[in-house]
Each structure stands twice: as C-alpha cells, then as structure tokens.
Image (cartoon, rainbow, N blue to C red; front, side):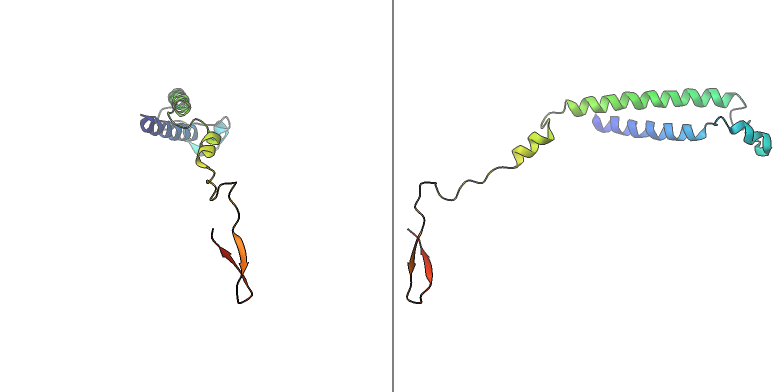
Length: 120
C-alpha cells in the first residue's frame, strides 16, 4: 500500500512541476506583444489559464494528501519507532572474558630470561 502511495506521490510531484512550467507568468503578455504569438496556442487565450490552474490545483491537492498519508504510515509503522532506540538495541556490550573476581595469570621467569604467561 505504501508503495502505491509513493508512486502516486511521485507522479503528482511530476505533474505539479510540468503544469507550473506550462503556465504563463505575469510577464508573458509583454513577450506576446513583441511577436511571440504563442498566447493563443493549445487551449485558446483564456482557456489555458483556467484549465492549467485547475489541473495544477488538483495535482497539488493529490500531492498534499499523499504527503500526509506517507507521513502517517511512516509514524505508525510497526517495529522500531525511534532511530536512537534502534541504535541502542544494535549496540550490545560484549560479555567479559573473565569474571571480576578471578585471579590474574601468574608470570614466571623461564630459563631464557623472558617472562611467560602460565594459565591457571
């Protein structure tokens, strides 16, 4: 389910980007006055403003809803709820090799004159 929401989220984001790039800015009228001639292209003069504005609003609404859904699913996911708690569980202290009350190994000189550990 989360993968489907993620796919819809990415498609809505791409739609918002594309629709915003298609829209005319406030300075587009000045460019059309100097011979651009693209003001009445695909949707007509005023039709593009209404259609693109409504399509952008729809994509932004879908993007907002999928953002909330992904945030909700991430916060209610089963398992580790905190990165700090997960790291604390991952780091475990290794048990000591010897008990604290054990005697240290005795060091006895050898015939060659060097010290050597002798196990108990």
